Image (cartoon, rainbow, N blue to C red):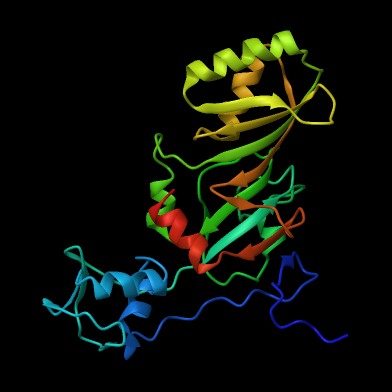
Amino acid sequence: MKKNSNQKSFFKKKKASPPSIPSPVNLENLRLNKFMAHGGVGTRRECEVLIKKGLVKVNDEVVTEAAYRVQKNDVVKYEGKVIQIDKKYVYVLLNKPKGYPLSFEKIEGEKTLQNIFADKIKVKISPVGTMEKESMGLLVLTDDDVLVEKYAQPDRQLKEVYHIILKAPIQEDALQKIQKKAADSKIIKSISHVKDKGKEEIGVEMKWGGDTYLRNFFEKSGHPVAKIDRMSLGGLTKKDLPRGWFRLLTEKEVIFLKHFG
């Protein structure tokens, strides 16, 4: 059967071919809107609009043609800030399995991220945010230190959706008390039973906080957690991404994390 060239490639441990790691961008002779897109300003179409509005300067002169070719020594500015694309970073979305600590070190008797990525990623990547060893679900990893630092801040906001399984069912009256407590926290947006599932299965939407916060929240409320699974992260989902697999983020997904998360 002929392979569809438009189909995404996904990777799991040693059973699939390594991802195609982006090579450094040749900064010479790029169209101005493409140069800006690589700099994280927006998509090429969005950057073209900004250029036509006269919001972009090259060497301190307003340029309104998106087709302008950026030369090696050109200084491009948007809203007074220099756009730089000296390095092409790697951004990975992983559906982390349970029991994997966020470590690339080899630990005797344990599986770590090293077992998943092995030699498939040639650069040193770090998790964006945290995730406990026993938690599972979506996790972003990158070598972009600025993005890692951004989401290390305690007040950063990135919508997260979790599927939680408690060690015992929780009835409606007890759930209502939990919902009131969650509303007061201003961190958890909603808590509800998962439709057509048992009373021990809970769906949670958060503004920020992470899996450790959730585990502590439920356990302090008298409802110990058996399983935590992050289903969605800042609009990223598990679609076509089985447990233990990873893929590279798209350009639009990276822009969202950088500028809107």
